[in-house]
Image (cartoon, rainbow, N blue to C red; front, side, top):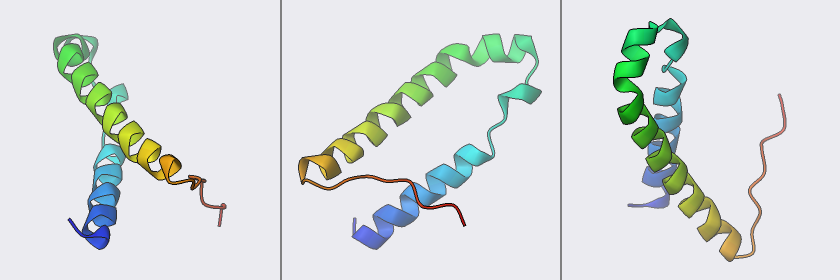
Length: 68
């Protein structure tokens, strides 16, 4: 995957997450899907940490963009 494709994939993932709003799920739906939701969130966390660690291992910093 090229760097441009990788950045686009990360942006698409972030955009998709922006569409997730569990506040609208009723308690039953949330309880029923909690194991799947937890697994998905843990996988995302692990992959984001892996990428961030690889950047930091090269001596670079990850910084939040300045607010516009």
